[in-house]
Image (cartoon, rainbow, N blue to C red; front, side, top):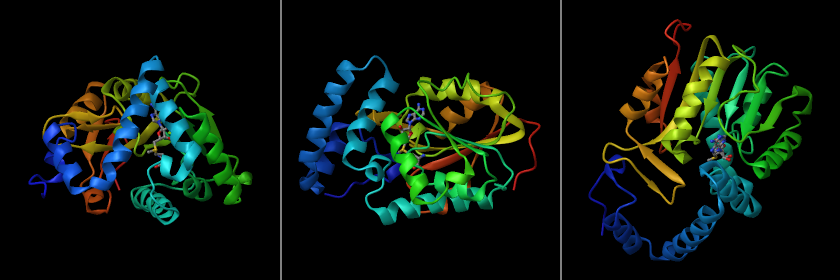
Length: 265
Ligand SMILES: C[S@@+](CC[C@H](N)C(=O)[O-])C[C@H]1O[C@@H](n2cnc3c(N)ncnc32)[C@H](O)[C@@H]1O
């Protein structure tokens, strides 16, 4: 039974989709059910989405930190990190940029950014202490201690503890795909303060052209215009990155800038 809809029209939360998927992938049903039951338990004891997703990451990272950030194998982990790095490098990243990576995970791309940037110019934040411990191991493995990156645990995206006008590049890959709209709204409401004049904020998201939905409150699907309008409400200009669509990655990418920003590259 093949799915008649293209990926951007599928509603993964609908019963029809789930039944079709189960018929096509009977070996995955057991895993889905056990994830569903784990997530129900974690949601019941979590006070908000961040606490819930932190618990999901704890459980996933205990098994395998690379799988916890979404990579099926070490080769995929390396390739996904390279794709993020190459794209940003081709779209304006320079060694003297000061970068904030939101949801840095275990530095799948972060270690490449750290390696490229001048010492002290990378700041990674994440809600998961478990994945930040894995990030430290990635740093050691890649011999990047002397680059003096900062890694900080956060509980929200108010960014209150970070200096105003500091970061020339802000990056969030595969973070809004795990975030309800109020978390994205909080981020967009606050990221402008920490952006340097002329800076930009790139983020990926799971795109739907149909109804917005989520699966187990782990994966969230948004229409492009929902996110571009939200960014505009917070004073940004938002640009859908068409050329990112050509890469073998299921998500889409938006770049937001202040209207007075540096020329696009
Ligand atoms: C799929 S992983 C991607 C990690 C990294 N960006 C990469 O591409 O390898 C998502 C990461 O975002 C973090 N995260 C999720 N929601 C967050 C939030 N509201 N604030 C900061 N980090 C968040 C998770 O803990 C996890 O490490």
